[in-house]
Length: 64
Image 1 (cartoon, rainbow, N blue to C red):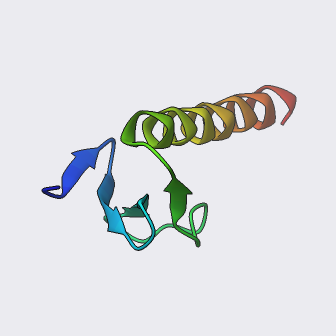
Image 2 (cartoon, one colour):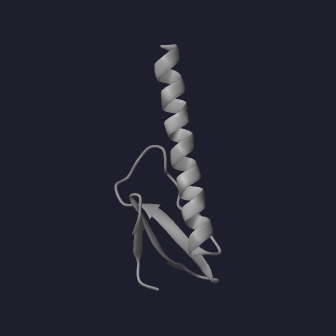
Image 3 (cartoon, rainbow, N blue to C red):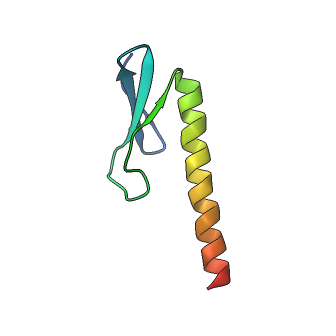
């Protein structure tokens, strides 16, 4: 598989029929890489993590 970019993450092959996604530009929110069995599930978990951060930032902005 060729490396693929998805929303700032680089998706590559990992040992054991797994896929690995690391942040292209280092971030305090994503210190560890994401791992999944399929590329689709990896993209879903990335989208979920990004939405979670967006919701938390919106909540903090409203309450401050």
